[in-house]
Length: 235
Length: 235
DNA sequence: ATTCAATAATTGGTTATCCAAATAAAAATT
DNA sequence: AATTTTTATTTGGATAACCAATTATTGAAT
Image (tube, rainbow over all chains, first blue to last red; front, side, top):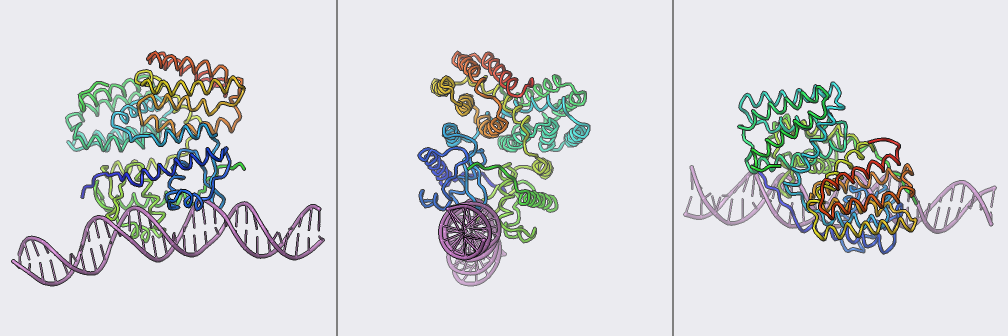
C-alpha cells in the first residue's frame, strides 16, 4: 500500500504560537543565558495549552540549541542572549519547507565539497566502502535494473569519507527528500544510468588518487549531466 | 545559575538498539517502500522496550525521511528500498557528534555560498534587514560592548536573503553550537570587533551592489581574519 | 456468490498519572 | 547562631490509560 505525505496545519501553528509565547516570556522577564524558564506545568497553564504542546515546543528550541532541559531541574536558556534569541526564533518561525530547487542547490554545494575533502582525507577503509558502493551500482545498471538506491549510497559513502560529520549529517537529511522528488516526477530513467556509472568511476578514481581538484571537477560534471537530462535545465 | 551540557549514554544507546532492530526487521521481512511496519505496541513487545522507546526511534527515522507515520493507520516504509534503507540507517547509527572543526568548515562553506546568493537574489526588504543588523552590531562595538549576538544576526540575515531555505535551516542548526564553542574558549575578544565591523560593512556593500563574486571574496576574507585571530590557524 | 451495512478490533496520537531525582524548606542538633 | 539532618515540594521524564480515526470482520440482504 502506497501512502502520500500530508501535513496537519493545526498542530503546526499551535506549536508556533507556543514558541512565540516562550519568546515573549524570555523578553518580558529579560532572561539571560543560564536562567531558568518556568516549569512545563506552569507554562501549559499560562499559555492555556497542554503540557505536551509545551514539551514539543521546548524540544524544537532545544534542537536549535536555544534551550536546554535538565531532568528534575528545569529548562534553561542556552548560552545565547536575548537579542540573538529573538532573531533566531523569528527565523525559525518563518522557516518555510524547503523547495526542491533549494534542496538541489544545497546538495551540489555539499557534494562538491565532500568530494574534494574525501580526496584529501579518505582512509583506505573509506576507499574500500566507496568502491563497493560503486560496483554494486555498476552491477545493477549492467543488469538493466533500477539503481537509484545504489547511486545514493555511493554519494553517501563519499560524504562519510570526507571526515566532516556535519556535512555527513546534512547529506543524510536532504538525500531522502531529493530521492522522493526524483521518483515522484519519474525523471532520470535508466537511459541515463550507463553514463552515470562512468562518471561515478571517474570520481572514484580521483578520490583514489587523492586529487581533490579533479574529484570536485568530476563531481561538478556529474551533476551537470544529471540535471541537464532530468530537468532540461542548466545549473 | 549556569548549567553544563551533559549527554546520557543510556537512553541514547537504547534508541540505537531499537533503530537497529527495526532495520533488521525490515531486512528479514523484506519490506518494500510503502509497506507497513508492525504496530508500535507489537514492536515494543517484540523488542522488550517501552512504546515510548519505539516512538522515539520511529520519529528519528521519520526525521531522516525513512519512515512515515499515518495516524490511526500505521507506520510505513518511505520511498526508499531495502538497500538504501540499510545504508542510511548504518550511517545514522555511526554518526558522531560534530567536532568544532567540522562545524567551522561547514559554516564557511555555507556562508561563502549564502553571501554569493544573497548578492544575486536579495530583495530590498532583505537588504534593509541586513543593514539594520549591521548597524546594531556597529553601535554595540563602538560602545565597547560585547556584540557576539549582533554579529550572529548579521550572518543569519544574509542566510535568509540567500533565498535558499535549506541553507538557511542549516545555518540555524550550526550557529548556536559555534557560538557556544566561541564563548567556551573565551577567544575572539573585543579587540577584533572593530575590524569585524569594517569587514561586515564591506560584505553588506557587495550585497547591496549585487556583486556576488565580491560578496563571496569579502566573506572569505572575513573568516580568514576571524579564525587567524581566534585560533592562530590558517584555514 | 456478491455487495453493502454494521460491528469489532487495531492503530498512532493524546491526556492523565506516576516516578525518581533535585531543590527548597523546616526542624533538630550542636 | 550556625550547621546538619530531615521532610516536603517541585521538576522533567517515564508509564499507563484513554481517544478518535481507521481498518478488518461479520452478517444480512439481494
